[in-house]
Image (cartoon, rainbow, N blue to C red; front, side, top):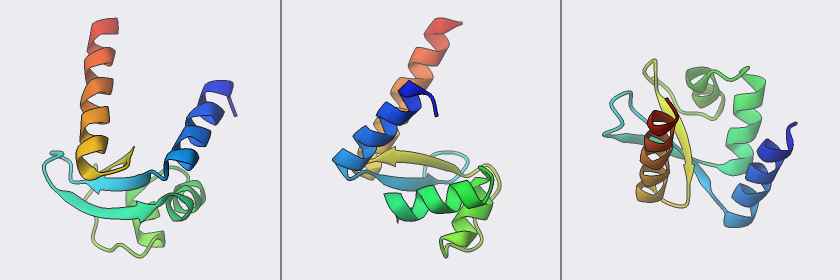
Length: 91
């Protein structure tokens, strides 16, 4: 695991962040999952959000569902939008 990934994981652990699953349009939160449960499910699913959701007991998750870390739905959406903004600036 890279140093940056390890640091981010530790920050999430300390911050008690949850994984929020949003529909493909990022307008509706479908579920929230505890960090330990989500990390296990996403690892076991090989990175597939829809498969991980099923493993975490969340059924009928549409394709292209996004899982975003955060302390709340609003925090996770804000983090996502900041990431998109930084990504666009780099191009």
